[in-house]
Length: 429
Image (tube, rainbow, N blue to C red):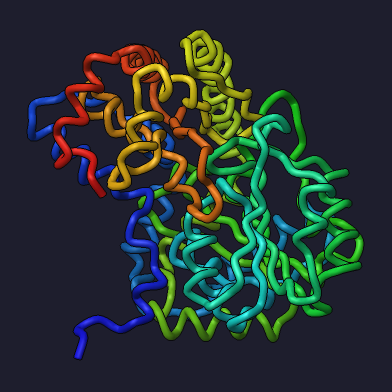
């Protein structure tokens, strides 16, 4: 009898956190690292938010609360979403969650039966593919094209949608690409889904980066389009917008009260409730206008870094990079660099080797001291020949410049790569 349940085989053992093991190993070998792998703002949560949480703790708001979320937080979320999406949302349609991730498994396990189809962006946040597989769905990755700035249009989506399509995942601005969907793009999505998908389809709209958008663009949400509120599960969190990654607080807005009750049931079954003092601090983040200025300052910093770093990446022989429209990531294409140093040929001739981009990622880490994330960290279905790495611009400009310089050195280091592949304990999966 096996120790582990068979269902664990549906979880992807290799994910975006695997690089941390390699980073620890590289540091133990004496390598100093520039960390461009982490999707965490290099800012602290605002003082008004911190003070609110401390005051709530001191007054004893540290006990169990409604698993759906405390009413003041849900009312703040409902008001914010109603104002910004132009639809009517009540607090009974809002569920507080312990971080931004829970609405992903909650949606997959609530709406998707084995054999139902789930369409999700690739490259995309890895939990989409992981939880769709776990739910027994038919995986239908919507591959995002570099030539389209990692957006997609009707021609890309329409062939994937059938009457078995139960769930479509959207993410704009996107992790890891920084791609941004326009209102016209979303109108096409709405038309296609209404015409071709399962009658009870749902759209999981991941809008975690809605406030981090560049070039004067306006964030667009599919929830605000005619007929879409009734089909949309909006997920959001405070991690990126308010630099509250460690607080672990987010929310989902459901199409109906009944569906919110189902998400509430998941909350009860998994973590009982989200800490009430943290919810009150999250409410403070939403309602205090001083935080709008703090968000603008962070966004301006990310945009400045983008404007400085993307040209530097594009000056590296063998690397090219689109200009992200939002979030704080860049996804440079390293196919040319992989060919230059010999990674492409090596992987072609060695079945034990991972993809060339993964080899470049590990080589750049161990030999040149820069930590990035490879393409395989963001969805693995149908990615053969797609050689990208993600860098996070949630680091100081000085760190970003140093990291890009190290990537440039790795991109031409044929001799170093030849020595690296002779150490299979560093790269063999």
